[in-house]
Length: 194
Image (cartoon, rainbow, N blue to C red; front, side, top):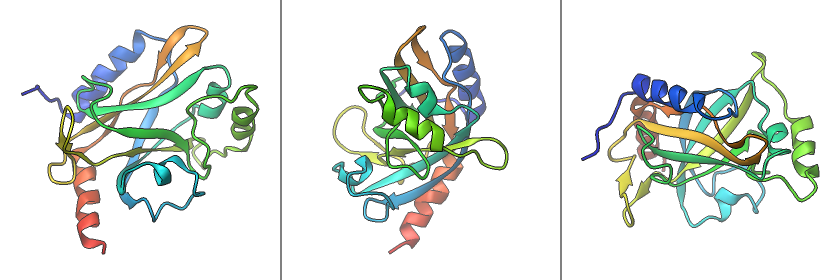
């Protein structure tokens, strides 16, 4: 069984790892909620609505970094996730990141960068000067390696944003930790919802 660390240790490990590579910025966990594919308020072509998953844990996080602006000069930006610590960046299935209120994934710049540039200009900061983002985590995987079920067995979830094709090579964000207690609340809400 793999050794698991608490949120503070995972966050510290993430900061140390991020210091070794160019940074995509610092991100802060805000909340997590359970959402079904049908309940996602976005256009039909929105990736979490077309993916073969019935429900997600939607992780909300924020930053002073404007990800769409960063995407203009990178080939791809993607979220990676695993149970803490982030030993296997493909350990938990995750879609995103997405800018809240926008249906365009901040995953890759378009051929001429126009779509990313347009999104960077319309993205609004909150009253604290931060941008809001989400990532959609598939809450359980019975097949494949490793199997997990965050609804039945909530655990600290580590997310990190990674980019390729930038000026400095591979880039990373800090590790964003969604605490097991927040996932447990989302799982309890899922049980209460019809």
